[in-house]
Picture 1 (cartoon, one colour):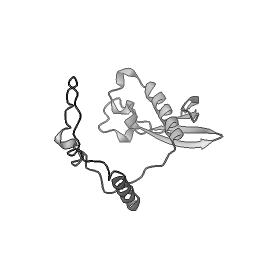
Picture 2: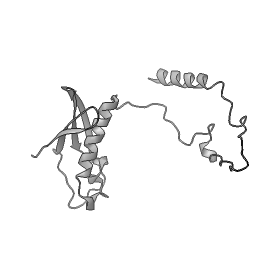
Picture 3: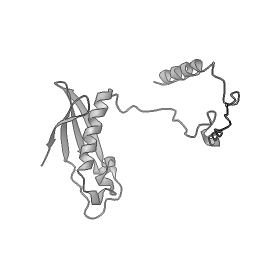
Picture 4: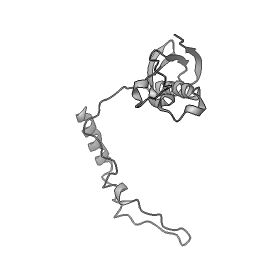
Length: 151
């Protein structure tokens, strides 16, 4: 896995070899157009603002339509949560988990509630762990059918 990321980095650097650095480029300025501000010191091309991790654990590899399907199902579940409680962790996407499969040309998306992902669930918190919703979603991201599991 590490070899692949090094290979991608080398390929990107080789592809960019002919591009002059920002210090070598002189922006053209019209009489009527102001100069654009330079990026902040921490976001310059030579100084990354984000420190990239050395090792990344892949969670899954999904094709684009599977991502569209899971996003459509996740958005539908979140839209059904009570509006008055959307600032609570258990009523956000953070407390959900998505499982995607494919069958008969559609994506089957299961959305599980994971209240254990939220810290400090107080009185009146929802502790049901066997809650889920099942969706049949087209490759274009259109929900075909929803099945709500009720224990």
